[in-house]
Amino acid sequence: MSLAVGSIVNFGSNILVAVALPVMFSAFGQAAVFWMFGGIALASLLFVVFVVPETKGNTLEEIEAQLGEKNPEPSLRDPLVDSLIDGIGA
Image (cartoon, rainbow, N blue to C red; front, side):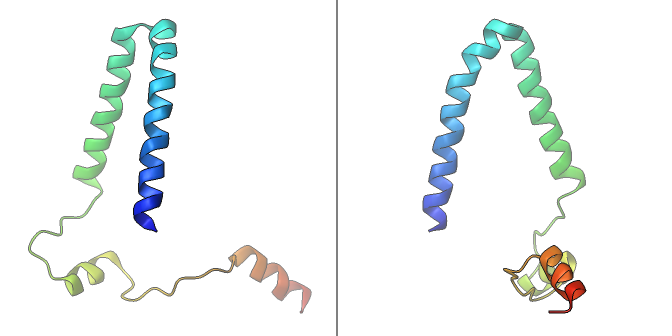
């Protein structure tokens, strides 16, 4: 299932770029679009270098401890809805 979702997101992103790029070229020029994408790439690199933790050489247990809760329970309930229900007294 996740492979299908990933493929759909990838295909949709490719369509978005293919449609938006000519419009962006005509509106801003090729150089400006190049620098914009370069800035996005640089921001992504800085995010990975400074925010994403290094996990090389760590066991799965060490990574889980480093990232926080060991076995988070998936929740399908919305905390806002739960608080509203608790406030009503139901």
